[in-house]
Image (cartoon, rainbow, N blue to C red):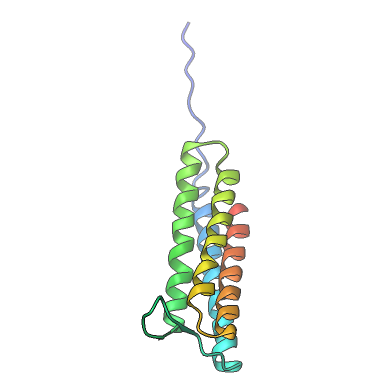
Length: 140
């Protein structure tokens, strides 16, 4: 006597929900970075200047903030998706990697910021985007 088993398929649209939620989390992270830039630069007059090594000073534009706030979280999403397919402990492992990665990004503003206000603003952007993305993607 043979017993047939079928794998339960998720309901139609169920896989779209996490994708939509994760996309909204990424958008919220980008918005958080842009909001801090919009408050710091035009409103408070912070000059977001960075210098890498002995190079020339460069201004951090809103386009740079938007790109950075989008690329890093998308890489995090990709890693989370990869881990979800490979392990049952994906969320815990991903969270550790994400927090360590966020802490490592602090080195960039601390080393490259020209003024204290630029360093603080850049750190705030990193913390805001990182917090939104880490907490948000963990919940999806």
